[in-house]
Image 1 (cartoon, rainbow, N blue to C red):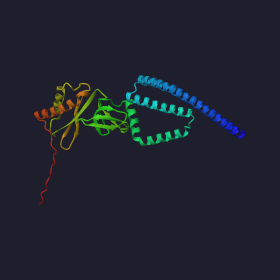
Image 2 (image 1 turned 45 degrees about the horizontal axis):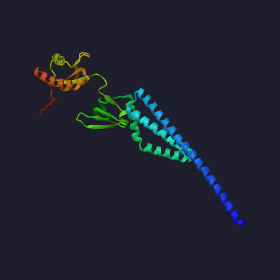
Image 3 (image 1 turned 90 degrees about the vertical axis):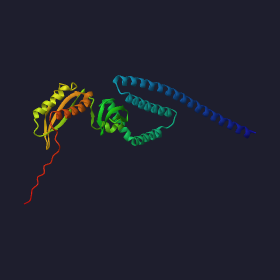
Length: 283
């Protein structure tokens, strides 16, 4: 009887100890859980506040919308990861391995996306320094056309024959870009070959008359006509005129046409390549 009583007493003590330990751990976990909920709630409030401040700062600085959106998303992700690690650590979970795995994954992803990261950096440079804008006509990476879109990884241009070309921003930002829209005026250079023996003064006056008849050609800087080269088969006349940027191609083609017609009408000949062959008659 005494042995049974003692056994029951011991079991009750063990049960009490177990219950006390369980209740203590449950309370401790509950407190930790409540603390984690509070940390998450406060953390999200802080992240949203930082996002609003960042939006105002980027807007005042005039940062491009694409860059602003990416920066805000990246900072939001980083702060959220920090918040999650803090919460996991508060729950009593060792975060050392988690951070190591996260760092390794970041390195692996960075190596896999190295080309895209280069293009992203190029996109940031283009959007910040604006070597060209949408609507500009550019020559870059062997491609020529009008800029249609400037994305964070690539730039789309439309060529003269209406083809869409996507140029990676990495190569685009690190190489030569010719922007034909930077200035309000452009210079047209034409080289016209005339026959040897032609009166040059007459050809020069005729060229200047053609230029003066076109009101789209600017007076300042003044038109320029001079002999450029004495080639094998022709005297090459250089004609330089300045026009408004938007008139460039119309004036260019029209000037070529009018020079051809007028020179023919006034007897100024265009030479053909010639070769003189001397025959030595044997005795």
